[in-house]
Length: 186
Length: 391
Image (tube, rainbow over the protein chains, first blue to last red):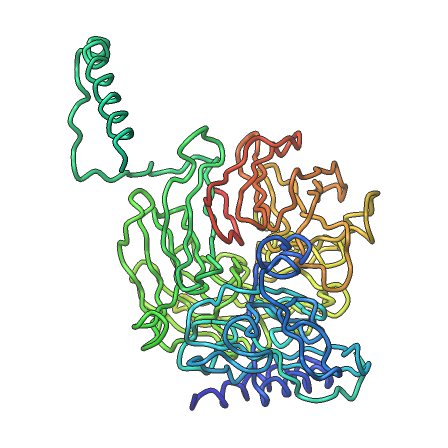
């Protein structure tokens, strides 16, 4: 962890030289707030349906927030916060949509997505922090790539194992944490 | 247990005893005794129908593997396995009978001290013949991306991409099994071997930077191209198909971008379009993980998705388009019997086109006619992300 800030600073400087201000702010946001995403079988939801991953075929009862302003089933890949997630959903793995499962460690760094909440029509900045230190959860695999870009732009890429800066690099599942309302619509 | 079933069993034994003399007469000699232990070995040179398949084993990522598959034989298609732990990456030498797996372990499986290591396998025995421990716990971990681990300098050196999230490349001497050095790559990703001793890397401002290396493994010269990768609007997929020293990339919206890596500087060529076609839900775009491959004659094969849009680039595809990059012309479309995630052509004279399906099954098509030759199922791989045909 000690060297982590230095490395983040180093790459931030590197990125700053070469990218627009808006991209830089996105990356800084990711570096400061921390979080993560992980790779998933890169298959469309349609193709994966029936694979036990998501949709009505998962056999997992719906989990719906009591707050109508946070609509949808957070065990399903089409839940609004998951617009750029890639991994096993922690809400199916002993954690919650924004909480890691017991005994795992939440990654302090990640990349962020901007997802539209259909209930209030606001764009929210979502941090996809990975949970680390136990093996693959294996449930509710979800891969959505709205705004995802290749590894050449890691701050916008969900193919990275973001269990970085954690005690263990072993990936368990991914959360989707609200960081705030995006000031700029997606 | 009831009395009737006991009686039935006795009857069955009686029938067997009566039948035995007749069966034995048919085979006067018993089967020969067999030696123990017995372990299979492989030919020193793999046939062109063989392929190395990276199975990331998504449901237990720390226990991935590289599977050696014969795509042509009628039986015994799974030839052997090399473990590949925790978002590993492999590369195979052609001038030395070795296969290298860069992998990561924790001392207590999921916790404890992290060790990154290049494990060296013997091509004929698939036994471990050595290892190179990599200090610092910085090996990049990604969904299998071939260009994170490549060879250069006539295959004497390996280049391994690190991500912490600072980017760097380790230069490793495979003959002495020592690390020569590390090159920082702020803002750049991946390794595209270029020239006799060096590599290019893709940068977040849309350029490529080529680094020539000295005999000591340090950077001797570096040069950067103009920006040609429009990451916002039409990003290049990170893994190209190689035809000699030409790297053929495809882009999210369906262009082909050649980059000449003969060296000493990466030279991007003019882009051309894969074209449009009927049968699209929205529009045809490349989709999947390993979306472009080449056969020995230099034809390209691109996995295409009929519902192309922003965010569809990993959704897999239902057709493979065959393209002659020299003529910048699409030759034909192969309609897949089942959708695929990744594709790889063999370098056989009559090439096979292997399509990895979302459930891990591998379909082998005749690349020329587009007909389905065979299906390799039975969990030959759980999560096959990349495939590398024998060169």
